[in-house]
Amino acid sequence: MGTESIMQRLEQIEPKIVFFESSVHYNGKLRSLTEKYEQCLGRLRKVADFKRAVLIIRDEPYSKEQPDSTTWGRFLSTAKGRPLTFEQLPFSHPGFIVYSSGTTGAPKCIVHSACGLLMQVKKDYLLHLDVRPGDTVYQYTTTGWIMWAMVLCGLSYGGSVVVYDGSPLYPDPLVTLRLVEKLKDGKTKYQKAYFERFGNNIWTQGDFISASPVSGGFTILGRRSVFQEGGKPFPSSTSPGSNGSLVHILTEEIQSSDGVLNPSGVRFGSAEIYQAIKKFTEFEETICIGQRRPQDNDKAVILFVKMKGSQHLTKALIVSVRSAISTSLSPRHVPKFIFDVPEIPYTINGKKIELAVKQIVSSQVITPSGAVMNPESLKFFQRFAHDSYLKQKVEEPKNQL
Image (cartoon, rainbow, N blue to C red; front, top):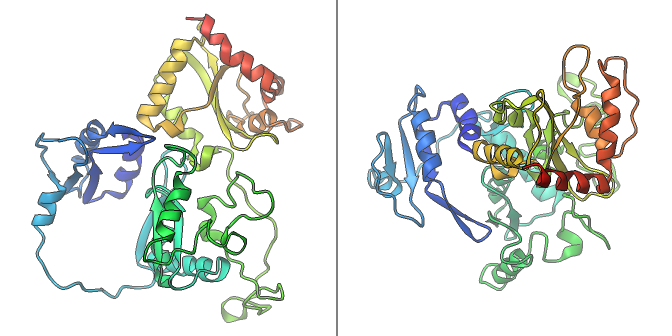
């Protein structure tokens, strides 16, 4: 994440201590994080309850002294040794903060109780996935995703977890398989995850396995159904709930809101993109959506822009926009395509119609409702559902330098 994206989250919760790393390895490259650390530290000093930052120095030396900051080594040296104690807390005591995708402004913090998440994860591991004591769960995830909280709570089943945070394709696509093979041959019994006993334990199985995930991480806390051998819900009571209340379970699901983008499993909102590019005066209006056609294995983020006056969308401008988004948010937020359009569709109430544009570029046929202020503008987006037109548009800016 970029500085702005990080601070949108931290400034809401007003942390007392924040841990930073000086660098990170990804895809075989060393990326320095010290500039981002200094920028965040400057803004954290304005947070009321902030006490200090702790910098974990990795590959490159960092000797610059910063007020309200210390190194990991110094931080540990100030600790007073005492026996480990486990404080008894209420069931609903806060345990994790997970953020929304930021579709309507800054990402909102969602507080999960420690025991609530623990109970949900134990149900998933023990009942849904048949994880047994002594098994090891392998999970490819960053520590900033709810899947990390899931595997952490998963330790309660009496086994082990292995978390891989890095590129799953470097130096080649078999890197994670080699890791699992290496761990399997060690002293610990590594039989869980997606690789040992495929037929019983893999989350997605069959003769042909889709590259799409079985479930997004944001639905983890929504898996409520457990079935016994006969296919009946368990518990089997017809009137669940307190005081004999009648609960009717609906089969209809509520999907993600219009502005949620999810390329390669990275979930964020269109509002974050709009905030990152608002400094570009060349644009009169913009709309950002996710495209996924029947032939696509993943969702692609597309940013459409309406140029102001006689301005043109040049290759240089596209590079600047990509750089601004990458710096402000993260490289994962950068749209795959950036195209210019003559008009952005709006409702009569002045809201961008992201859902209709998303459906059209994803090869769906829609009928504009009477709430669309400029329904004729939607026809222009039909061409972006075709690969030939996408390729043509990608090559055009090369001649507009």
